Length: 71
Image (cartoon, helix red, strand yellow):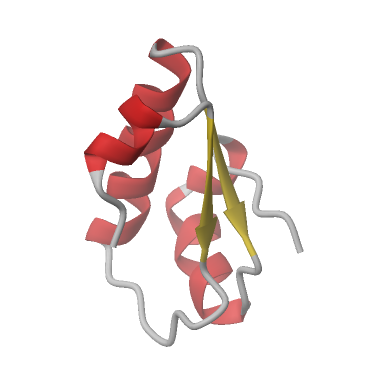
């Protein structure tokens, strides 16, 4: 789980999605809100290691345009 304080405390936050086995429709929205918060604070949120089960909901909602997950 991403703690909002991490976005206020660090210049870059790497969000490890490698172990995600399920993401419902709330997941992409939460990730985009976190990305927006990071951007506003001049910080960087880096989704990392997203597998098919994390990428698919991002693509279905169009959130993948806002969040680029690194391998």
